[in-house]
Image 1 (spheres, rainbow, N blue to C red):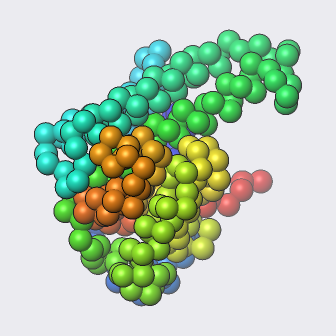
Image 2: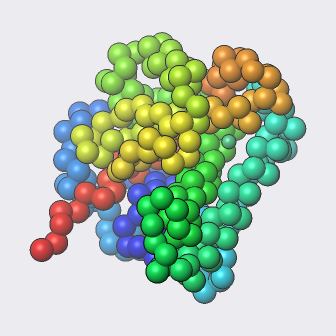
Image 3: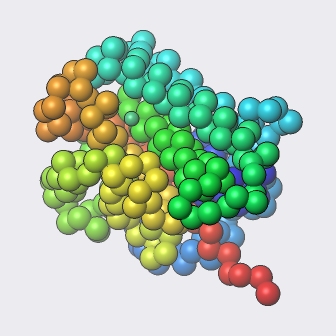
Amino acid sequence: MINETKQCQPNLINETEAQNQSELTRRDVLLMGAVTASTLFTSKAVAKAASQASIVDTSSSAEPYIAKDFAHLLSKKLEGLSQSQISQHLKLYQGYVKKANEIHRKLKDVDLVSANPTYSPLRELLVEQSYALNGAIYHEYYFANLGGKGGEATGDLRAALDDRFGNWSKFADYLKAAGKSMRGWVIVGYNTRINRIETFGLDLHNVYTPANIVPILVLDVYEHAYMVDYGIDRAKYLDAFMQNIDWEIAAKRFMAAIKNPCCLVEPVA
Ligand SMILES: [Fe+2]
């Protein structure tokens, strides 16, 4: 994902810029073809977005991944999520960033001669690369969509959620049920294959990860996300999570996703 022109991460896009894009009607959103939508985003904007990568430092630094600062989550009172819970969770996230750097470094000099699908250093590094990197990226989405006032989404995102789930109550019930069903993550994401919102579940950072899905709202359901505050009572944690969602961030991701759907460029012969 380093130095690529096209990247599948809406949080790489300047959120103010995304917010300033003209509002689309619900009908526009549903009818907008992905390729047509992509033309709204100029190559200049894409280049600018790439230069604002969240955890990727495109300089010649030996450590390409840099942990984002979520200290604001410690200074503000989150509803039902303690400072201790968030603090320990942030340390875990920073560990994934550190390991992503370590794996990136080791892949440069890994032995290729011993490559083998049962065991080889290359295989192990490739497997854990996806684990560490997804661990970093999904946590960034998660922490970034915490710190809000909860409640309900509005605007185009709300319209898309209602279109998919029927109404807000059904969406909320679906999200919490998905949170009880998975062992790692629940992703409310923009499916760039069919241009619609859908919910996806992951049991680990790199298990059941669908391609070309742009995360809009990310929910961490690993036990480490709530054990400090709630022990094994995940249902109470899910209620707390709902009260802290930043729907403005989710809405910006959604608008960025529909205006710049990733990975939809036709293969070049
Ligand atoms: Fe986590």
